[in-house]
Each structure stands twice: as structure tokens, then as C-alpha cells.
Image 1 (cartoon, rainbow, N blue to C red):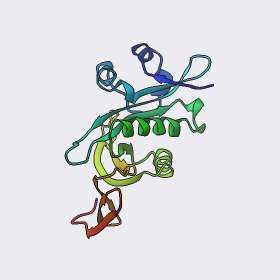
Image 2 (cartoon, rainbow, N blue to C red):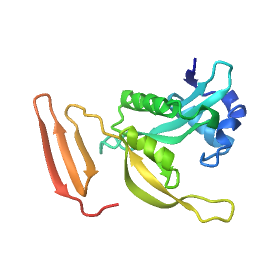
Image 3 (tube, rainbow, N blue to C red):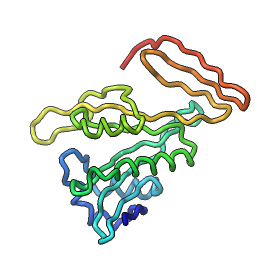
Length: 193
């Protein structure tokens, strides 16, 4: 049975089978330690019964509470090749969404390589949508051109008394939720991504 547990410092010496994937963004050890110190609840690993690491998700909370932009952000999500197509990435995303909602986040966002269509399709199946393209977001180290990334975000959770806005089909939609009603207004977006 797969175990989902908090990522530990010791796991930094055991997750090469996951990070060797060319689509996985890897970082220096201080970067991982910073996430462990600041957002430990957002850093989760999946472990096989035999102790082999299967995958992990690393994220954080960021944004502005005052502007209702406080949200969870997925910094890295990767599953070792031998454990793919088991629904593990979706389970890790679900866990990060739950943590973000408990922490008062309004949504979850992430960046994904434009060329990683398997991941893009998975996020779409999970209810996420592409809201922008960031040019040359991923640096290439082998003389290749830098790669673009899609900015992807999930659905916003409804909270009583809060204003929400999100872009859909060229429109900004504003919603105010109260105990007794939901008031919605749509206006044309000034620009599209």
C-alpha cells in the first residue's frame, strides 16, 4: 500500500529515481530545505511498501489575502516513471488542494512546460485551465532554446462573503457570495493571455 507522508531531509538522498526525468525541474539542496522549513505541510512524498520513493509534490502558500489572491502554488510535482499511470499525481494534487483550502487559499496554481502534454491533459482533467503562457520560463542548459510554460490555475472555492474573479472566454466574472444569495457580473476583459 502506498504511503503519503511528509517529505524529510533524508528523502533528498533518496529521490533521484524521480528527479532524473528530463521534464522534472530540479533545484539545489538549499531550495528544497527552504520549502521544508517554510511550507512543510505542502511538501509530501509517496512511498511504496518496500520504501522506494514513488513521487512527490512540493508547494507553498502565496499571494495576498487582502486582494483575495491567497492561494496554494505547486512548485514541483513528479512521479517516477515506473509508478506513472496509477493516479498518484492526481492524488498528490488533491492533497495539496485540501491543504491549501484549509489554509484559507482561494485556488491552486502552477506552471507546466508547454511540451509536457501528458501533464497539461492531466491538469485539465482535474479541472484546471491554462490562463496564460509565460515565454522562456524554463531555462535550457544544453544550448537549446528556453521553453515556454503555461500558467495553470484551478477552480476557486466559494466562501461566504468573499468576492471572486476569474477569466473565462474573454470575460472577467465577478461574484459575491452571501448566505442568502450569489450576485454575478461579467465584463469584457481588457486583454487576453
